[in-house]
Length: 311
Image (cartoon, one colour):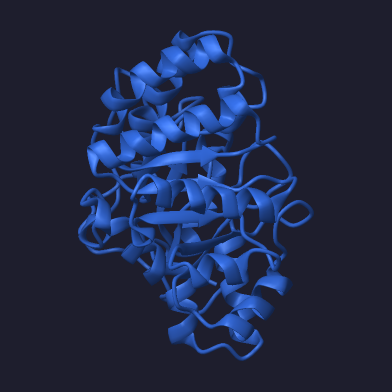
């Protein structure tokens, strides 16, 4: 894995889809904080109650579960583009958003944007941008798999129609086709290391070599699909091997994500530098992360060699 003592942030990962083994591996690889954007679960939701339970999970249980493995968890709240096409669900979800967007640990409205670029997707994209403006929140934009360039440019146009400052908008899932437009217009330019559908780590190294590190950062978007929750540290390792300086790797894999999202006021470096010691005997709503009679891990005041970043 990457160089010893490097810290990483994965600013887009769907931990609700992952196991506690992933949390353990991520911590050992140096990931200190994650951001979990609200997203489509694969199985379409049929009513707003399902959305309410989901939002409650990512602001509550998942935040607790991450803490039990030494990782600080944040999230974003939004109506995903795919589910904007269910108008009844979308209307009721919009009523939930202000309540959940103001919860502790929520760093942005997102991920929002386009899937098929339908009229309904655009309607709720507008409404959520207006909500972000009203609540003075950052925005995380999902750019579509199809018509990527068109959808990305239209997304930035909408942000500017609503008077949003590009420095408070993160445009995600970029590729070689969109990077110049997004950088030129002053937005945070995120790339998802999700080989096969979004971005491979070899290609990502080439992008950093060509465009530098200003306003560029990476994430894994690991979810229930064939994805890798170690996408950020593995790509950092490849960058180092291919001659990118440790300082630049830190910017792309840690600092730029922190600089973007700390604007929310909900995310601070102190959150993980001074995090509470792990105590797996704790419970959340009466439930613990332990299964099968496992003994709880309780972190010592001074970390042992096994507790710090390895490999």
